Length: 146
View 1 (tube, rainbow, N blue to C red):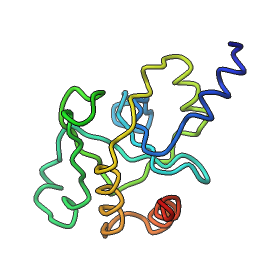
View 2 (cartoon, rainbow, N blue to C red):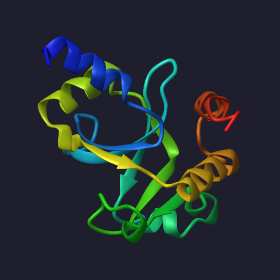
View 3 (spheres, one colour):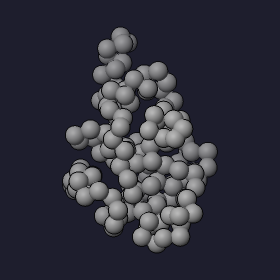
View 4 (tube, one colour):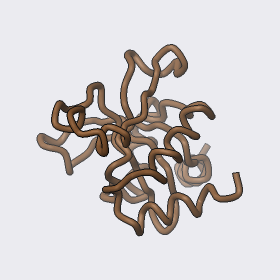
């Protein structure tokens, strides 16, 4: 497969509800992080996945309700239970950034989260008191017909 065809194939197969392990310049320090793609329009909308819930978030019900459990027993691509943080959408990575990282290493595509997790993420986004309204609307519009 030519590099151009490979790129097109990857681009066409980057879909909502996929979990990626991507290098993130926006973290401190910059590092590889699991990110869940929850929207593609007008650019990738990503949620951060963490292995623990920060004590500050844990101690505040309105923030803790924005954390969705991601069970390793239900997602073969995870080494341990994790949490999807639905408080903030990350837009620093473009589709080209994701394609480039996946082209270099196909293992960056981890897999899809299950339907139960998808429903929990949608519910957490709807209920979130801190997620920016523009992102909440974009994400909910993307899944309105599901």
